[in-house]
View: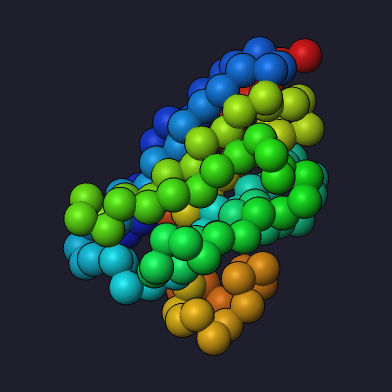
Length: 125
């Protein structure tokens, strides 16, 4: 069974950093664009970042630009999200997902057909 497994979440003070990782099992996603979404309690899931199978193509939502970086290592079949200068409003469950193709919207959750179970990120003020 194909799974995406996130790790690296936790509790951090405002201004701190965390690095999330996503490691698929059951198949490789090295040719797939990948993304990170997050969902805060009581809110809808929102796009955070995406990266093409060619790593130079990356997108970030405006609220995290300059603070978050998405990267991938196709040899290791992993995708990472480096989060710096964290704010309390970054608190959410973060999900890794695999997008069907580059032709589909990176910002639309419906473009992704494989999802992880999520990892909790909590930023205290």
